[in-house]
Length: 200
Ligand SMILES: Nc1nc2c(c(=O)[nH]1)N[C@H]1C(S)=C(S)[C@@H](COP(=O)(O)O)O[C@H]1N2
Ligand SMILES: [Mo]
Image (tube, rainbow, N blue to C red):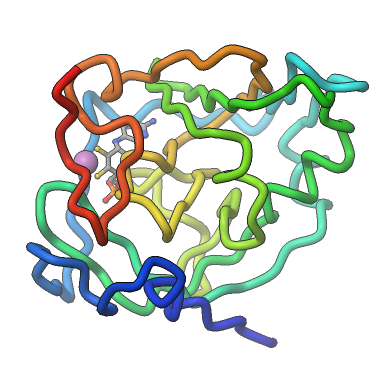
């Protein structure tokens, strides 16, 4: 199996591998706004909606047939810990965007989750091969507490930009703010600029 190492993403942002104010941990803490939601493979559906040519809907069986790649990525939590060298297998964001056909007018994206969480990003921050819909971590099915069966990972942003238990991607023409972005966390979330809180 080929693993693409993207742990050099910090070079794109002119920073060190460990962003300022972060400490490396070998643990993988769990940070969720509430309880881990139930996953029912029979009823789970994933949708791509909004400013696209074709809205998409996948069952769990169908989603698992999508082409994936495995990448070695770092993971930076806004509360100050970083877990390095995570091997995530997942579907790159651009693969789904191409299947739906993104409208020219689309400029933003909202991710939605089974637990009611949401998070937003500009479209250009999503149209990167390192933004993955991750199904596996370190060769195992993604653990439920870490967002299994499916989560987003965003190695170029603090981890709250990656929705656990993701079930929806909406393409937007106007920006909307997600759960933490409405509650004082940075809308931009660049770890190498320490964009943690927003002045709102
Ligand atoms: N659906 C959902 N996604 C979420 C969250 C959440 O509460 N619900 N928390 C976010 C935050 S604040 C962080 S730091 C990471 C934590 O991921 P982890 O629990 O796998 O460490 O998930 C992000 N994605
Ligand atoms: Mo977080």
